[in-house]
Length: 368
Image (cartoon, rainbow, N blue to C red):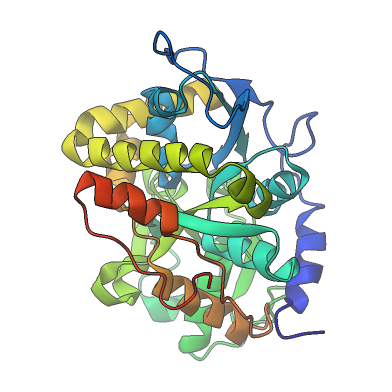
């Protein structure tokens, strides 16, 4: 197997595919639908002659750039008469599968699935074209069972999926504490229990786990159930910044429709700008879209702390993606990958320059 391919990660994806991802009949995520609330300006034309651009994201606050951009109609505004269509996902592998099949064109996704998708295809399936969010990941524990970091040993800690971004982060942290854990089974000095974020709070209430290393809003849901934040992952990173959500695109779509990709990136930049300028309104908009997607809004006791722990950024924080890949290698979930070419920030930097904003760097992992 070449160095560019994942080792155990390929088996990991096969295991993940059997998990209950709550997928609907389309086979990948929720049913694709256009944004009926967005208004198309009179006289608007289709971009690149496209009838639609299909956008994917997760129902997580760490994907709030997409949530807000959709709810505010910003994607539709930039796409003109080309319809913005959406699909929501519960897991990275299913979104990568949708991207590879053409069921979506562009997606918001975590770093580990992006790395896996890129390396599995020998660098031919996707490009990371922008950043979206940093932070928003915490280790929340039962304070009756775990009072300090050293008490994590011997306990059951949930992560969202085998080989996902938080799973890799927790395995790396455990190794740094000197704990030995088998990455595949999750057994060892700490027991890693791979649990879908949707049911992690119930597992915590039932006492089947002692804590969880999870993204928002799951972390704040656990706190609302009596959990305590033992560690914020941002404290483990330089300047407390690390990529949690990127924007990816099918290479085929990028090559064929750069104007459409640029329009989506412009909407993303506008979304982040609006989020920063109107934090309370943006928080409400993200929650409104979450409610529309899932049928249930987040209560304030969950929404407020979750939102405050996430930073929204156009910068993909490329150097931290490289570090996260190294963590996966150390954990035994990935062979050392060749990530050269995973980024193409050309269109993002074009948009940023037009906005008078600073351009961003690909940490030497760009095309060309």
